[in-house]
Length: 353
Image (cartoon, rainbow, N blue to C red):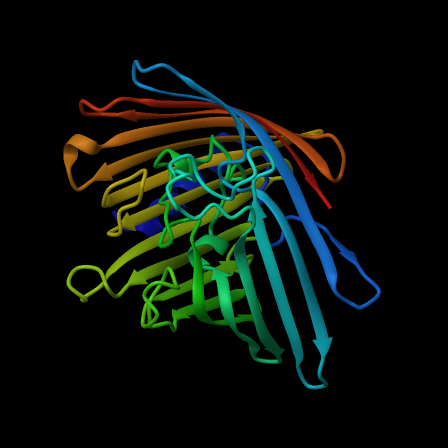
């Protein structure tokens, strides 16, 4: 079935079955508030720490107090008027306030591996013109910034940690180093293009001629309706012919308080939590008072049938103030073959400044 037709049918059925709307995303470059200094540079950030309880199959569960996704951020950004255009820049670092290293659990810091406390997330300089933005540096790819609906990104219960969406540099939460970025908006249409420019194999996570592209249309056909397409392409994959991850996405604000979302990914570039295949994700966001509930289900139809899986996730984000929230949730990945299910509970607190 055509993917756009599938998305339209899903949203139509959802609008008849439910009522409400929350189309928000947790976009790490934009989610923290900024405080303006006297020099015109804006300093911003957020602190996160959480308690995680994870188990795989019948093995003993593992408890942690950590920020393994490095959701904590410190950043600066500025905009300088140059007349007919503006120079804009940002530098944003990620870190873990629980164990002090910007690394995952698999990194052995006693074995000469990289264990920096602060790790650059994005950093770039560019020009904002009447025709759009052009700049260079490191960026979140359009595959992430468009059609990214998991508000639990970078936490233990995130969908990409359980195969509910793709992961890795070419996946749903990817950032690209040493790249050229072009971004423009024409009315309700947003277009973004990212191209890797580095031939230094040890110093960039993407290489020259790798590219990412995204197209998003919002509020054009129906108010509250967003549809789009994104691609990440790895030229070095498959004997230099290249491999791509492609995503069709849609969301619809059914009514105030409730929104539904849909993504369908054709994944050729395998990640840590999924193989090559198709990942279809559907869910909703429901806002009630100071609480925002996310419910999501996903199916992974992998090229190797024995690795097919399903994912279910439920969480609640409670806003204690404009700057502080507490999130509690549960996510489970069940393997349809002989593999072990992965179950994660999480409780975390975030403060933005």
